Amino acid sequence: MRLIVADQQKFARRGDGFGAMAKGYDRLFRHYLSAFDEVVVLGQALTTEDPSSAPVTGPGISLVAIEGSRHPLRMLAALPAMRRRLAEAYAPEDAYVLRMPGLIPDLLGRRLMRQGHPFAVEMPGDPWLTFGPAGNRHPLQPLLRAHFTRALRRQCATACAVGYCSRAQCLRYPPARGALVTYYSYASLPDDGVVAAPRRFEAGRRVRLVSVAGLQRMYKAPDVVLAALARCLADGLDLELTWVGGGRLLEPMRARARRLGLEDRARFLGQLPAGEAVAEQLDAADLFLLPSRAEGLPGALIEAMARALPCIGSTVGGIPELLAEEDLVPPGDARALAAKIAQVVTDPGRMTRMSQRNRQTALGYRECVVAPRRRTLYEALRRTTEDWLAAR
Image 1: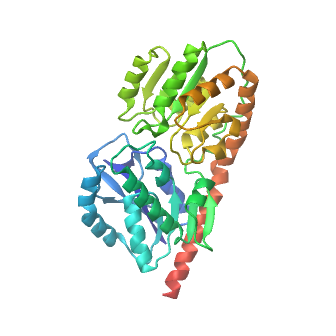
Image 2 (image 1 turned 180 degrees about the vertical axis):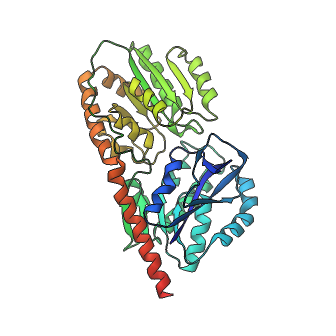
């Protein structure tokens, strides 16, 4: 059976097909082949080529380009063409996964519901948080938040199977009665991706902080991290920060660091290749920071925990499912973050216990643990689709 995956991510053209602009997408679509014979991805394709993007097309996997735009008004103008393209892509004999939120899966979901066709929903994002005022300042933010939150609730209440990345999502977007429900991270670790032993810390040296997060929007709170770092340094703590991640806010954050007098204590490295280059930065650090204003179940945090790093995060999204309560701070609160950093870095015993705890938690996010949960959803979707076809 063929599977159609509707995804809002953008894909670049490259000589051998299409490439992913987002981390981890080069592996994502291969997972579906565990239950389906062929995978067709419906996604936005850029007009320009990017040979550095990670290839997503290959044996059993193809991509149907849907025209779109980042600009909301241009996206509205493209709606008729998008609907036509999705109508052409629809076939009753296929199975369907909607990766929400996004306009492409939203439009396809409406068509499937009109047809009474079964489908599954996966939720790598949460529009209530993504389009929340703390992390998104667009003038259409309230309308986008309301629209996509309502659409996702409707789809979860109709889907035959839902894969949540956190239990908080299940409360906000309840499934239909009788639907298969499972939970899994969309950023699973390789089976050998967790370090062999926790770290041990000693007092008396400079503490290296690290954050790994894109800088396209402010919801990863780089401004809060810089403000907290400045407070800690003013209080006499010996710290330095490395930020890994690129985006349109990279230069503004470098400028903010200079204004705060942090030129020698805050490095913004920009985007690094996924894998070894990022792991080297994590291994060189002592404490990972992710005080996000909005979040799903952050893969960057799971990767840091897999390197046995002590971590501080905010009380949003799925972060409280990963970290102990004593390692959490309110979002957007630089004073609270600075106080928490001070508590942690001045207590080597606590940092050692955090390392042990985080490493143990990360073991539950290895591919050998996540894959069976994911496959359960795919197999349930295939069975339900086959039964629906047989009953027509």
